[in-house]
Length: 415
Ligand code: ADP
Ligand code: ASP
Ligand code: MG
Image (cartoon, rainbow, N blue to C red; front, side, top):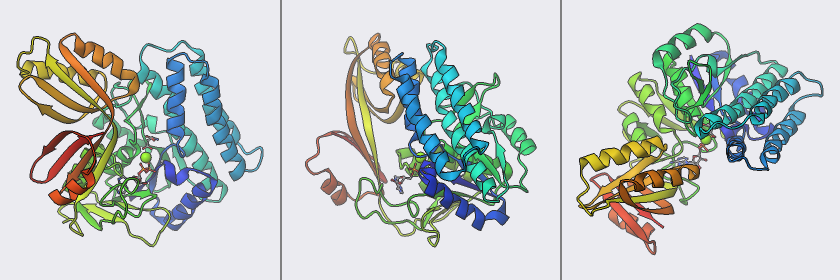
């Protein structure tokens, strides 16, 4: 069997859903398990709802109305009036309304997960109903019944043993199954999320447990390119990649694949195909064990909105192991993802992805033990298999704050 994953861009409007249905019609005999993300930019919109609720802002309903209107317009384009899907969608939205009537817990990640996860429940409900409407029978699976996690909200860790037994018990591989990416559930039945862009990872979990022949991730690009096409002109497609190289690229932030996706696939030798949902003639990029990079190329990766934190001991003492371990524990507590570390005798620098809402708390806590400086809004460029002259050209005129390199990889933090 095969596992397919469709991201937000592939279900961003009614036409896109029809396109997904065309693809699933073409591959209907494969009876894939299909993992789908929230529609378009709905995760961002729901994040705004969660944030406004948590901060007790006045515009929570306005923000929720945006989400409601988006889905209701969507439905009107796909279904006749009085179709039962209207009720199913409105029930899901009412669940958010109920959650918003309570006082927010002083735990943003928890509140985030309860609200933001609804995006995937909405999208899969709509796609599953549309497929049935056009005669493609399918099972809608609530991923929370099978993807079991710990309670680390916003970046929950999979309980593989339980997840394996639940997926094996509940998925019928002889039928087309539609399920959600990104979401899971704790043993206390609270919804969790696996981290932004986590649907790729969900798809890898299903593929691994079900022993899929391959995982196909359908994208709005023709495959993995040698650079992010949003920031680099003339990004070229890569035909083949090894798991190891793809893991490196994802680790450094090539946002075309979620970093956690590749390890379970590699361990279980399940190849990954990244291909276009627009141009079905294109076979995309094939990622498997021991594939050389074809064609041989440098890869450019840009991570935006980085925060540079520098810490130094208040007494100007050397920064040593116990300082570093304390600092890392605090960073983990605030869900800060460390993308680069550089140490000098008296300071340590971290380039971080950290939620705006967490920065003040993080800086305050670190300031108890260290002198802390913080610069926000930076870019981190990583080049794999770099050539010095190419890197110099790209950095011309840029204000470089940190550089780190080894034989294969250079990272540059700049304004
Ligand atoms: P999804 O709809 O699955 O969530 P994403 O938007 O997360 O899709 O991922 C696809 C996007 O990733 C592309 O539109 C492209 O802008 C971006 N991207 C970043 N780096 C690369 C790369 N190296 N190759 C291809 N796409 C990339
Ligand atoms: N909808 C979630 C997000 O936008 C998960 C995903 O799309 O992979 O981050
Ligand atoms: Mg995405």
